[in-house]
Image (cartoon, rainbow, N blue to C red; front, side):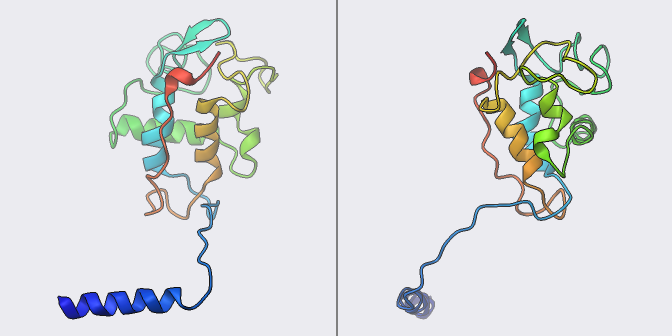
Length: 171
């Protein structure tokens, strides 16, 4: 054990003596898949959150909005309170992915429909404006999820998003 420690220390000293700075590159889009773990940890909670919207308070997964069982919110349907790893969560993942523009995340319907001041393809979001601007924390976490793509939806680089305090989202 002591010999391994000496070797490790020697290697560390040798590497620092090289004189080259080691830089850490930010994670960038490298594939065509979206992370399931990041969706479960950071995006799906936004769908269940009570957010202060332009017309009061809204919950995306609410029964009057996008609830798969009783929602009237168009083609985007999600299961409320889906458990990580469940078929309902995977359904939510695929529903959200279907409204994500992987070529141009800023043009994702998942972001544009609830964004204040945007007249989307189908008209305005009948649930009101949810995100006041692109600096909104919930908008940002969804945007990041769409922007950082990987080769495999369960890649080892997934699961490192930072959940947002949903109480800071909306108006």
